[in-house]
Image (cartoon, rainbow, N blue to C red; front, side):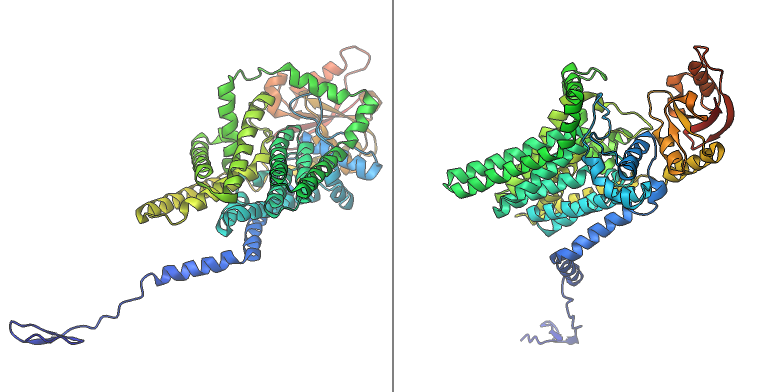
Length: 556
């Protein structure tokens, strides 16, 4: 007979009883469940998650702001306008000049920065700090939008992706009119989505107003308006179909109010147009009706390149600097967007398809509205005119990635999908971090420019100075503002000034045909005195403001 009991084994062949080890099985997956429980607890606390992603964004943007971003002609021009506005009361009716024609962006950019300039006595570092804080806020708004569409994990993914985005960090660390665009674009998308999910029409006023701000910050932001108006029109039609006239009336009223906010933002431009016989309008029409063959790309190539810039920009920055990484990121992003637009259901399907259509529309419209902007110029900030698409791209990829990582009906598919997505996430985040802009500008940023202004004023004293730029098509305001900031005086006429200050940019030596540091400046002085009405100015001092800019001071 065979008898079995706990801790013993009885063999029937020899009836020998031997003791066996009592094994207490370890609870399977205890560590894994602990980690998952902690993750769920963390994700359930929205405020904690928001603080973490915004803290990560701040840590990547705020350190070393004084010398981190570039300070060149565009930055000097913007600070001059802010200085004259806040100190001298010269109200700006136009924004910064565009890079696509002989007209300007909106004045909202200067009105946005004016309070900080007034409080800080037009200190560029304070103004850039405000731009950096707007970049941090954009991360928070993008987190909220993704969370409201795809849940807490999607929100965390979107927040982290934008927080570590090399393009978003670069946009937050120097002075330029497109840099606040991601915040206002994210606010517009989030407000429109909030209006859709809650039925509260008043959110449309904020959505359209922020879209108007995007348009003000860059003229090509007009491309951002149609997707919002289409969603509003669909909401109005849905309300009318279900017979809810009151909801349709509220939506129409909110839409009209939002368009009124956009019109209000254009009041400075309207005043300027009435004073100048619509000069800006005529210049804009001339540009958009003239066409462009600057780079000779066929329509399909333009579409392909614009797609790369729009989708790749948030993750790698300028795609021409990292074609392999950009190709992989764009492939992953487009594949996820297409997959989720097909598989999503309910409100998530509406959101993914709407955001995807927004990005697709932007690619098509920008390919044909501004083909000249597809030209990449090394050494200069390349116009991120498409930055309003960044929040949409980030949110789509975050929502789709999290959805693909959700449990599947077949465990093998589930494990494979999660493994691939983890690898993709590590690759994308690692690639972004590897592409972060340097912590210090190669040319010294504002501290170097400020030091050059102080040195010029030490040479010229209280005598007024006139500015000359080499190569001639570039503004010398990157040197003009530091001189004024140091207490100097700048006049337009070189022959009524006590000194002539020449700012020579080595980046354009091949264009000018002479080297900075002597030959280029001497040639320029020859041009000034070619009519024989004035003697050749005498060189007083020459020094390098940075690796790029050589400063020469002449006495007429």
